[in-house]
Image (tube, rainbow over all chains, first blue to last red; front, side, top):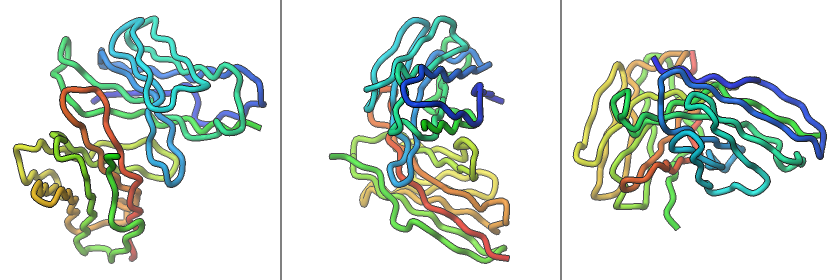
Length: 117
Length: 112
């Protein structure tokens, strides 16, 4: 089974703080994604990475950056947290076929509920 | 713009009945669809998927139907159980890209 883990389930930060959200997957997947989920808006893609050190902006990258130094780990960084970044953050991964069979299915972690005060 | 939507925001069913959750999509070029289940406070869990060259796919107690003529996707859950209570949402993929477009979800409530 695919396992995607996120470093924290709940996080409370103050406005202006730098925030790191970590995601790890254990299936050697090439692709990893960061989404935020807000009521009535569904999942919106922030950034994704198609390989180590590779990243691409999603639909709402403003205020965020990412880092992928190792294949299994994808970090989302809020450079200066703001109250409008209070949200549920979800990480996902997907295989492109180099190790595991290729699939279009994205597998999600449990989510981090971030509150910015 | 293109969108993935749902007909009903909340669906209430009696335990043991069958549930049908619907999803309308507008991009006729979409070639892959997924249903996810999300329980309160948890991440989305993959349920079942279907490619556009199929019109039906069955899993354990779940069936996905795809009607490309009217751009409609449905998830059928047989003999609904209390543990099926969750938000269900569909997602679509268009072409060879990496991105999925997600619907906003339907809340399924199972009444005892």
